[in-house]
Length: 175
Ligand SMILES: CC(C)(COP(=O)(O)OP(=O)(O)OC[C@H]1O[C@@H](n2cnc3c(N)ncnc32)[C@H](O)[C@@H]1OP(=O)(O)O)[C@@H](O)C(=O)NCCC(=O)NCCS
Image 1 (cartoon, protein in one colour):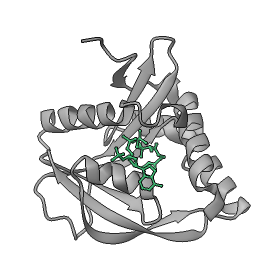
Image 2: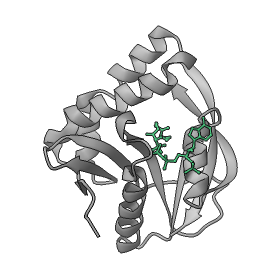
Image 3: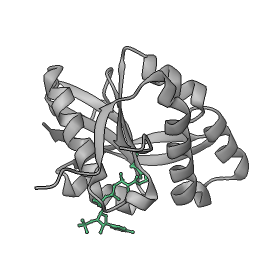
């Protein structure tokens, strides 16, 4: 069996610019159509900016994993958050998967599945028993991916992009 052309490791502070660019460009490619230019700019220069991503990487309540090619190019990221889960969550000991992004040139390549496996391994090791997440209700590909990996919709929440409010489905899955 040949090994995959990428490996998964915890993100380092110096990865922040690459991770910010990966998430920002992927988000823009798939979802920018759904928000105003002002909201997009606010989102990219706020929560998705390199300094904010670097703060997330260094935050002890967060875990950021990256999928990296041998060249050092980051092609995927999974961002976990330890903390309060929505009230609709039914499974015990949940950890939140705040972001899962794979560069569009690697969609369908197995990077996303490998990141989910790494999320499971890390979460179990830390004593968590389930992973919950929010996904935009119009994100058909994302929702199909999560369904394929075993997540189930258990409720709804809202999510802000700039000043626009969107509906997210809340999903959970045992690990
Ligand atoms: C979500 C994401 C990580 C999944 O990775 P991926 O490599 O695209 O996932 P896969 O190709 O393994 O699975 C996607 C599934 O959606 C299906 N799909 C693709 N386009 C679709 C569409 N418009 N509607 C419904 N299903 C769709 C694919 O056929 C595939 O299902 P299948 O394996 O049963 O054929 C990746 O698409 C991504 O980074 N998207 C942008 C960011 C995002 O939406 N993140 C999640 C929300 S935070």
